Structures are given as C-alpha cells and as structure tokens.
Length: 259
Ligand code: NDP
Image (tube, rainbow, N blue to C red; front, side, top):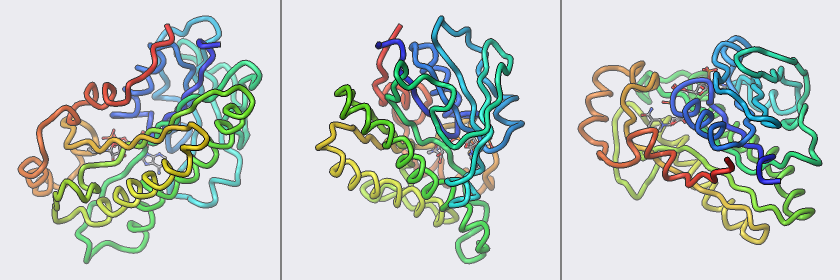
C-alpha cells in the first residue's frame, strides 16, 4: 500500500512548489500539482520518469477566483514522461485515481503571490487577490483534502498531513516588519493562526498540520519580481538560515521515502 500514497501540492508549477513536487515524485509519491491556468500546468509538467503505478496529475485552478473555483469543475491533466495522457473535467481532487488503491497522504499549500504596492496605495482587487490566493484558497483546498483524509483515517487508520508554506513575514514571533509587505504579511499571519487552531481541531483525528515560515529564498521568481528597494530591505532584515533554501524547506517537511 505504501507506494500508492498521493500528495497534492499547490503552487507547484514554478519555484519552491515545483521542487517539492519533484522531490515527492522521486520519493515514490503520486502527485497532484496545481497551477493557475491550463498553459502553466501543461508547460510545467514534471519530467521525472514515473514508476509502475505512480501518477502525476496537474490541475488548473485560478485561486484569485475564490470562492467561485471551489464549486466549479477544474481541468485536470494526467501526464506521463512529458506527455499529457488524459484530460478530465471534474471538481474531485482524486478524479482519475482508484480511491480503493490510492490514499491521499499529504497536502502542501504552497501557492502564493506577493504585493507590488504600499498598503496605502493597494487597490481593492490587489488586496482581494492576495488574500484569495495566499489564504482563502489554501483554507478551501485544506477542507477538500480533509474530506479524503478523514475518510482514510476512519476506514484504514491512515494518518494524513497538511503542510503550509507561510513566511517569516507573517510570523509575529519573528518580529520582522518590512514596509511594502502589509497585505502579504497579513495573509501569511492569517494562514499561520488558522493552522494553529486547525492543528488542535485535528489532533483527535491524528491528522498533522505543519506550518513552515521560510525567510528569503534567493533566485525565486517571487523575489525577482519585487521592487528592488523592498528586495534590499528584505535582505537586510530577514535571517540567514536553513529555511532560506528549497532544500532546507524540504528537509523541514520530513518527507516519507516510499521508494
Ligand atoms: P513563485 O512565484 O515562484 O511561484 C508561485 C506559485 O504559485 C506558482 O506555481 C503559481 O502558479 C502559483 N500561483 C500564483 N498565483 C496563482 C493563482 N492565482 N492561482 C493558483 N496558483 C497560483 O513563488 P515561490 O516559489 O517563490 O513561493 C512559494 C511560496 O513560498 C509562496 O506561498 C510564498 O509566499 C512562500 N515564500 C516564498 C519566499 C521566497 O523567498 N520566494 C519566502 C517566504 C515564503 P502559475 O505558475 O501557474 O501561475
């Protein structure tokens, strides 16, 4: 059964999320990766050779469209060795997988967007986009994944896990404040606090909730697109440490090796 474990990773077409996705595939998981649109999901599909019984499926969901996306169908692409084998329209995350054989083990909420204008100038659309992508959509994705995980816990005693990629900017204990990141920091603070409470609620079901708050991860698109002045302030204020590299983030997740 071990080799039929499934993980879901949002924000997995680029950057940190795509590296987590590929590491999960190399560890023997089947992976459902989520990107913001069909082109991105198809273009950025994994190029890793899959083992027998191992699947990779991309789902295209624009998280800016929360809450509408939750109740519509999503385009889903089952891919193998760099080619799309099947396209499905469904709002079942596990569509295409035989649920008797494949169990959802892990959800990684990694999708995120940054802020481009100071708090006082941010328009309502930008504010809504940041909250919808960074916070509200991860809450809804967590709920959808939990339905599958709770069933697996009750039927098979299988213990699932939810990992949230937040940011040191949203962690009030870090005391790091960078002007120009108010909405982004607030969206990550909301994610951290939501998951602290969720973790308590899920203890009785033996489902783990982990939140990882990285510092500045250099050479990611997210940092490259930031205003150079904000980049400089981030470099001055953010700690250097193990959560400033993708490898450090993956190590903190403590992934199972199913190979
Ligand atoms: P990238 O900008 O490289 O990638 C962002 C990912 O999120 C992409 O896969 C993108 O999908 C997806 N995404 C963006 N907008 C949407 C949307 N509207 N709907 C669905 N998916 C969307 O980001 P990073 O890899 O740098 O960051 C990953 C996470 O880590 C984020 O949550 C970020 O806040 C957090 N983080 C990053 C740090 C860093 O230094 N980079 C530091 C601390 C935290 P697509 O390509 O399809 O648009």
